[in-house]
Amino acid sequence: MSLSAARVLDLPASSFQPPAPPPQPKPLGAFRLIASLWRNPLECWAQDHFDKPIVIGGLPFAHVVLVSEPRAIEHVLLDNAGNYRKDSLQRRVLSAGLGHGLLSAEGEQWRVQRRTVAPVFARKTIMDFAPHMLAAAAALVARWRRQDGVSLDVAAAMTRLTLDVLERTIFSDGLGRAPEEFRLAMRTYFDTIGRIDPFDVLGLPPTVPRFAHWRVRSTLRFFEGAIDDIIATRRRRLAEEPDAVAKDILTLLLNALDPETGNRMAEIEVRSNILTFIAAGHETTANLLTWSLFLLSQAPAWRERVEAEAERELHAPPASLGERLVATRAVIDEAARLYPPIAAISRVALGPDELAGTKLKRGSLVVIAPYVLHRHRLLWRDPNTFDPTRFLGEARHAIDRYAYIPFGAGARTCIGSLFALQEATLVLASIVKNFRLDLAPGTAVWPLLRVTLRPANGLPMVITRRRAG
Ligand code: HEM
View 1 (spheres, rainbow, N blue to C red):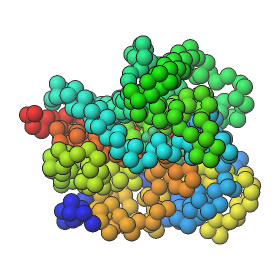
View 2 (cartoon, protein in one colour; view 1 turned 90 degrees about the vertical axis):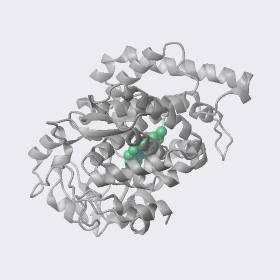
View 3 (cartoon, rainbow, N blue to C red; view 1 turned 60 degrees about the vertical axis):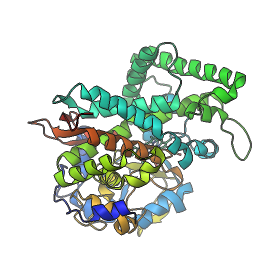
View 4 (cartoon, rainbow, N blue to C red; view 1 turned 45 degrees about the vertical axis):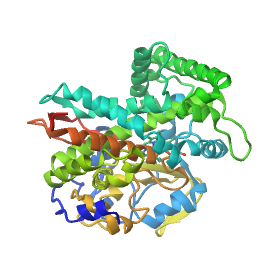
């Protein structure tokens, strides 16, 4: 255990129970279930889901199994992963523009891409991105210094910040000729693909145009065209002056070679993966930061500890910060436990199987819900209490790998987890070092699941400058 971990271990456990919908006393019938899935899927969980390792039931037209037993989860995501694929609704919702990227690909196309892209997200490469992440945080701090005492929507600010980090790490030499138009198109694009279209729920084939996609078709064309222009310019520069080109994610993707065949990725795969990284990486990380800031505002002892840690450690070389910001990281891990940005993962069984004594047939839908798993009574002490000491020292090592899965697990585990955790840690430390954030008076915070888990109505907070600097 590091010295810094030992120093924070003497913290009193907080007794704060952050807001969450109370579980339904018994599983909902089909009609109420569909209504609550539409309103806020977090409200559909019943007490049984948080008490039992496996619960069968749910939708009238599908055999649905919610699994919260770590060995059964390991079986689905790792040992027998070949028997499961992502379900088609999840893939259809994401497919616009991302179809050839890592998140949506299946089978051999996925395998080749994953091994080709892996070095882009290796630990050493991510560490090299630390200065870009700190620079984006510094830009936020500079903006907020002009807004001392003001109430602003921290959820929106975090989304802007995570996009800034991706812009700096993917396209480090800029967004081409019309950066503001590019940013606007990017926001419109991601607003569109995140929505679940009724046609997708009904299972209409992809050839039937989706209303939302049709509405913003010209924006999408502009956005995708702008990325193609940036790629073409970068290819030219790489051919002409390879040593002068920044080693950002775009360069790394264009240079990436499949270690088995030596092949490069096709043009459309490079574009799809850039869109995928932005889609998978900005709202998720923004929510993680937003929840961390909310939780700290409700737990004064932890806030002071994290402030002191940031003051003490943030001057150290960027590459060493991950090891030093121990309390900050524990708060982030606890935020990801209580409010996992991806609250549920689902898979369809391709053939029969058995999970924790329950028989599955071909076509069964297996749901693994980090939100439920992370608050499960059989796996966690005081599951609904905010207590980052769970992630310090020995306690962290005692957590079952398959009981805590904010980034998934197995072959399809999040490729960007190191990136996201490093970014969240550096940004959170930079913010608390400079500002104290308090919930704006009269604000009631409530978690809402809309693709990612976010506070309904944003997170208005008053920002107060901590020191003259
Ligand atoms: C807090 C932030 C994040 C969370 C909570 C998160 C969560 C997840 C989860 C749960 C999965 C697995 C989904 C499944 O098994 O069905 C996943 C996959 C993925 N994530 Fe993340 N993610 C985050 C940030 C990022 C970032 C920053 C990037 C890229 C820059 C990224 C890129 C991806 C990709 C490409 C996949 C698909 C991997 C594959 O199928 O091989 N994610 N993420």
